[in-house]
Image 1: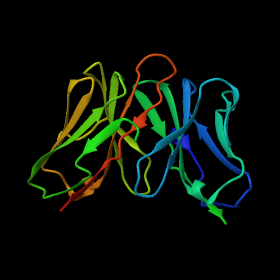
Image 2 (image 1 turned 180 degrees about the vertical axis):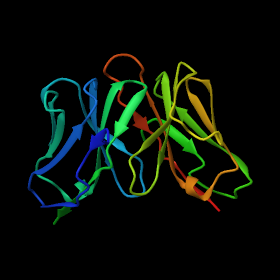
Image 3 (image 1 turned 45 degrees about the horizontal axis):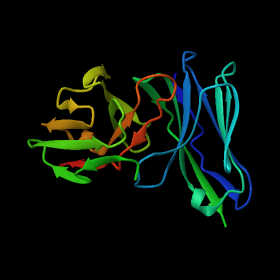
Image 4 (image 1 turned 30 degrees about the vertical axis):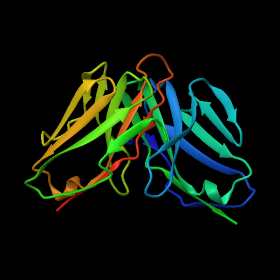
Amino acid sequence: QKEVEQNSGPLSVPEGAIASLNCTYSDRGSQSFFWYRQYSGKSPELIMFIYSNGDKEDGRFTAQLNKASQYVSLLIRDSQPSDSATYLCAVSPNFNKFYFGSGTKLNVKP
Amino acid sequence: ETGVTQTPRHLVMGMTNKKSLKCEQHLGHNAMYWYKQSAKKPLELMFVYSLEERVENNSVPSRFSPECPNSSHLFLHLHTLQPEDSALYLCASSQSEGYYNEQFFGPGTRLTVL
């Protein structure tokens, strides 16, 4: 069983729509949860982190965490073509263990 | 710019060569990491250093040898690599206390082993 599971996509949404990205994890001891965006040929860029149940909003991005269901999601409102990238979910039980999913490729069509 | 730099950005080496990758962070963090990213595979955590001491080694072959001389610098020494070691090698840094251990990545070194 993989530590972090993500749908590989591609997920295609029209410009201006809401993109919903999902992630499940297996380690119940995970304390910190992250979403990274990775453009082709570039390194991952941190866009959101969350460590308590519920929602966390930052601009057009909302991260949602449900520890009981071992589920993390990322909502991108008013999606733009520049949001087209691969989104990586990462979970961490402590600073020396990080588990990344394989990523979901998002295409935002103009 | 994330405050984490890596050199070189691209490296081509033969299987008998010895080379080193360098990483430097300017964020005041006390933990540093090496990752390997291959096509179609998740990021693989290779090594973790906290306060210059290695705290994690995820069954990485001995042909990869890390070195952390201080909390700002991290090296990955490479020798007698195999073609399957060709990948993007990423360095990251974070704090090692509490929940706020978000990692910031460098731009990576694209390694090709011939």
